[in-house]
Length: 379
Image 1 (cartoon, rainbow, N blue to C red):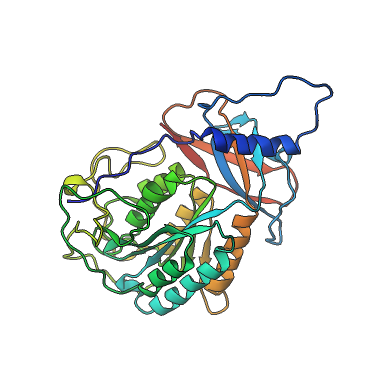
Image 2: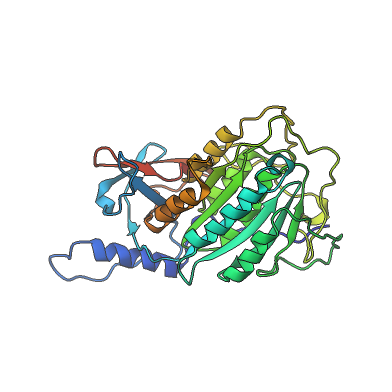
């Protein structure tokens, strides 16, 4: 038996405080009116779609001097007006580090552990920045929950690849408490999709501001309860950008046979009540369907292409770790992108039907590449 799921929140319904922040930033960039008039008011229940945006020039350098008038936005082919625009480089970061510790990564686990230490050094530079650490193999293990305490995060990184004690949880398991760590969600093999889903749905969805997940993996999933599509959907619903550091794994290796699903960690499991879960699986785009979908056990899976799909559809990108292109360099690049992100917001020109809506954002200026998520889900 697992813990009770955290209740879902409605997508893109931002609290009044966050909307006020964006409106204030927009007002600072706007030209003053020719004559005074009543102050504009924004209804607190307005539906706002937010986009974290990174822009690079033809040389790959981040561009950080644009205004909202430098962008063109459309939803499902219909032009949209950008109403909220923010480029505050001092906003705190909420970051998730997901590390693949499955058997296919056994030869690079030391490199992953070292790279994870670089993650702390490069990404958490503001006192209000927070991060959490997850390892995933046959289970998803939350080693440390969202915290700004680098000491706790370093201790969690030191435990990467080490066996975690577990016990059987009961129906009376307590809810997920931040700061506890060591919550587990049972699967079998390499539960990459489960890790992304849980990091997005149970941690990131409750946070505001700049949010990103960084995954260290070969991109091959074996044994997740969630699908690739539902993992991407969860990240999009949580307004979370996904980056990946690709470590080429051992081809043909499979570790999914015979492992039990479920189980609990030291402080309760990352499972679902009764051993199952509602609404698992589902198509993409267009929302999730009901019922659990088994994952196919393919002998050869192109993990790099899978990671490219996850990253591109959530607004991130992939870095292949080699001797020339190190993890430390990748984290430096990611940190620079996160610190220079634009936050754009708009209210759809008509009531969005439930399901997936495609977004296209481009820059007016020549030779600029815009990096953002490709769409969102409306409930």
